Image 1 (cartoon, rainbow, N blue to C red):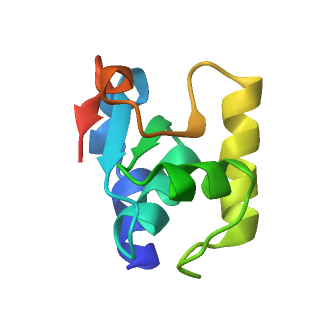
Image 2 (cartoon, rainbow, N blue to C red; image 1 turned 45 degrees about the horizontal axis):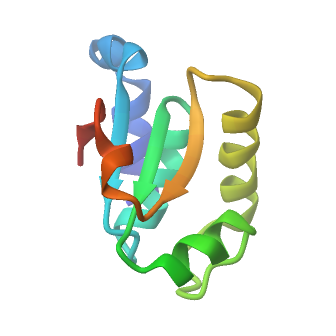
Amino acid sequence: MRSSVRTILSNKNCSMLSQKKIAVIGLGYVGLPLAIEFGKKYKVLGFDINNDQIEELKSGKDRTNEADLEGLQFAMTLSNQSDKLGLRFSSVIDELMGFIFL
């Protein structure tokens, strides 16, 4: 899956996404790795209704063991350094406003 995501992210036809904010809904075994990879290139909100999981992810931990923890830290650090890219997490529905849903 990671190689497919990288192919999508490197595609020049996706240049218009650089202006967009992406929300990945559901941070399970598919959503979390996807959110991490997109968070390296775009502004991403990882959303899940499980607040305990959100708090763990914010602290850099993954209970599912699906995440590339180095990639997770990198994408979260980007979010702290830029308002145009990086990954952050939430379980608050109102924070989804203005995002494209995946």
